[in-house]
Image (cartoon, rainbow, N blue to C red; front, top):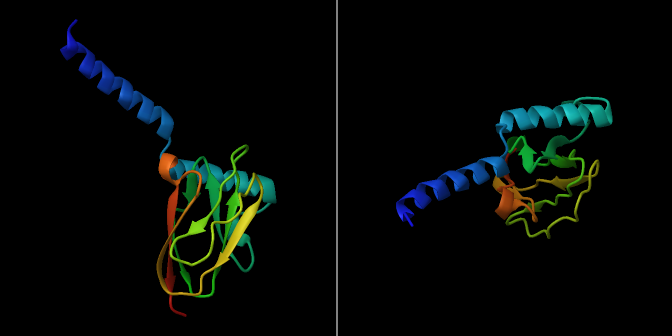
Length: 139
């Protein structure tokens, strides 16, 4: 058996599987779809939510994945997926991971400490790299 032939085939298969798992769309396209879904579900763009900054959760992505907000801002993560549930864990906040948000449900967190703060989806951060960051600026 020619093992030199099998190694390139294995690499091609691994690359294909990785590409299929990640999907063929770039994050900007996924986030555009997420915004369309949000508007469809709630009747207005996410930017028009009064008193909060909205981050959507869609196809194992936070949209947008990085935001900057002033201290005291409440971020609302809204699940616009059709079947998958997500959670939010703001690392180093001292708060526990949120409950799961099912489709059309949301999670809120008010940022009171300035600085960069990483967050992740508990069930999907390792397998899907579902990670985000909020940079909190002083008032």
